[in-house]
Structure formats: C-alpha cells, structure tokens
Length: 145
Length: 197
Image (cartoon, rainbow over the protein chains, first blue to last red):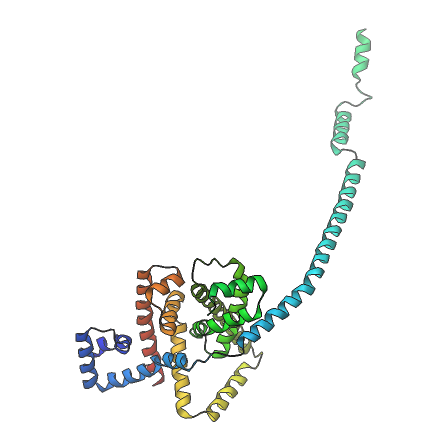
C-alpha cells in the first residue's frame, strides 16, 4: 500500500471496516512510513473526539422543569394577549366597514351629480356641424309644404 | 413503567406536568445528543432541545402514533438544529459586515474569551477542544443530508434502517450518504491537519 491509498482509508481503519487484507496492508504501511503514521495518530485523536463528547454527556436534571416553566409562562402570556387580539380584530373590522360605507357614499354622490361627459360632447358636435342660424331641418320641411 | 402512549395521553388529556417531565427526562439524551452533532457547545444543544420539547408539547395532538415517538423526536431535533445553524450563519455574516465597517466589538470580546480560556485550562484540555472544534468544523461543512446521516450514525449509532426511517429515504440512499460523508470528512480533516501542523 502506498501513502496516497493509506490516506484515503483512515476512517475505515479507525472504524475497523476494512477487509482483513486491507487492514493488514494498512498496518504494514503505517509501520514503515513515519509521516503517514504520525498523520494517522493525529487524525484518530480528532475523529475520536466525537466519542469523548458523547461519553462525557450527562443529562441536565433541570431541563424538564425549565421547559415546563417556559410553557406555563407562554400559556399565561397567550391568555392575556388573545382577548386584546380579538378586540383589536373586531375594532379593525368595524372601522373597515365604516370606511367602506363613507367611501361608497362619496363615490356614489359624486358620480350621480355630474353630467355625463358624453352628452355634452354630442351636443357640442351637433352645434358645430349644424349651426342653428345657418341651417334648420324644420325650415326646409316648411318650405316644402 | 408507563408507556410512551400512556404519557402522551396523560399530557393531552390532563395537561399533566409529571407526565411531560417524564417524557422529557426519558428522551432528553436522544434529543440533546442529536443537537450536539450539529452545534459546537452543549449550551446551544440544550437551548435547541428546549425548543424541540416545546414543539413536541404543542404538536402532541397531531402526532399519529403509527410511527415511533423516537423517530418523530429525531426529525424535530434535526430540523430545529439545522434552523439554528442557518440562523447562526446569518448572524455571523451580519456580525462580520458590522466589524468590517467598524461597528460592534465582537473581535475584542472573542480574543478576550480565548485568552481567559487559555489561562484557565490545562494544555491537553485545550488540545482536546481544538480537536473537537476541528471535527465540528469539518462536519458543519458537509452537505445537509450527509451531515444528518453522519450525526445519526456517529452520535446515536443508529442502524441504516433507522436512519432511513428518520430521513424518509431508502436504505441504499443512507449507505451512499454515509460513504460520501466519510470521504468528504476525511479530505477536510486531512486538509485542516496540514493547515495547523
């Protein structure tokens, strides 16, 4: 086994998941190459720090009580906030309806009080094309009589 | 011993503090150790564990008891931990921008922390901390799915089948994720080693 190959199987060597032949070749290489051996020792220390972390872990005896206290204070806070929220929602809805009525009324009044711009335009056009002093369709009819 | 199902019923029906505390004590190691795989300190892991149990309490009514409680707890713990890590990343980015523009005093406080730590601990303790930090950094750099599979495998020694259930993937996916996780981790750790030694 060469250095390049040995350096790719450090984790397998630590976890002992190499085949017997590979393990033997790896060990032989480590015995003959000081650089790889040193590198492997350091790698092993770093990789096995997970085990130390897991083994050192001890449950916190106060955690359950702490969580229960947080839940209780959260429930208390919610019970005081909810009525306020409901009141706020009802007030906002009422204000929205009132505003809608005011805007609707204003819009309706302003649209009904104005003369349709189309009517004005047609009257103006009729006067431009058929001025009353020059031509009256009724006069023509009178002469024909 | 009271079963998980009985504890859950007691919490849902009677809002029993005793049952809830029993549930927390029973599953605290599972949840906290899972969180510990994703973050650097036990304090952070315990903070996330609190969030996990609060969510569990609030969602117990929706828990379908067809799947195992432990599977559900692993999932909630993994999700909460990943959210925590993402939030921390954003905060770190914001802090580095602040310090770049001369706002805040993070650099100062960090260096003081290091000095006090070095002053108070023995050399081997510092070396252990450095090793742990190196490993945590390497794990944190793995893609999310590889990281989850690796943490569940190394911190809990779960079988491929159990990891597949928690991650909702096939067993062969787990095998592939773990294989790639170990390859990546090996490369990163060797790279880090060469940088420092």
